[in-house]
Length: 374
Image (cartoon, rainbow, N blue to C red; front, side, top):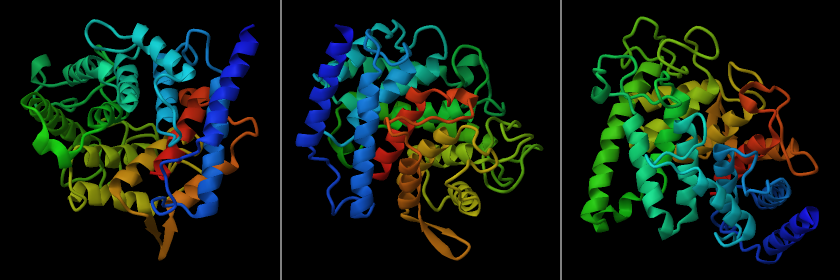
């Protein structure tokens, strides 16, 4: 019975994908060429189909709130006509609702910041008024997690403005970038003049959060004119946390430099700001599709989705590398599509940071492709 029920759901949803394939990415809007866009659409369909087939009975994916949040965002950002009432989507959100805590966090047993941030993005992607309180409470929770004067940390502290996994754990750029992305999603400066006083007050609170976050970001950047700490280099890239890098010592590496670039742009730092200029320069000098700069295949798919989001936010279609302009969207999309399994999933053979988990990596890849189709 369970297998038959799941097969019915899969065929109904995928049939909907094929007959109502009114993808929001029109030919005139898409930055990808026509044939590649069709390949990307097909790749996304295959990935979504595989995810539907591997949804748990309780509506989750892998019984994990963060993973479920990533998958739901992949569905809702796909450009296909998925709605909250669709069975797989509805059941996924039913699971997330069981993870909502009284303090506004959205998690079960561990990593409250990471899970809350990722789930918050999914609730925002649903664009449903009934989630308004959940969204506001989750944003408040993330702002309270930030290390600042409320916890007796002065602006001179290396940890000031940062966010960690939650609780008393040390802050890092990866957790902070998820929190910033979740806070910034769906903000639209063009309609701020029409906001209510409550909404304007929330924007002011977010600005304070971003300003403090930028202090922490500066402590993670290898750039002497903004980070005078003794451990800092001067190549413009980013490390994992002040004074420590997953690439060894305080070395800059790809995923954190894209995370730093993305976070600064989401926090409304201008493209001509020296911090942004230096980070972008490092990325052009270390441009790579097949591997994560300085990390090889470690965290490769996390790198892809961070890269896609960062360069989309930055707003450049071509990356200049040694006199050649690289169409990063076409190159990254072709590579991701080329390594998809015929069943629809992706997986990293290197299991660091859970990337041997097919559900997690498939969600990363779908989000990457969807970002490139924006």
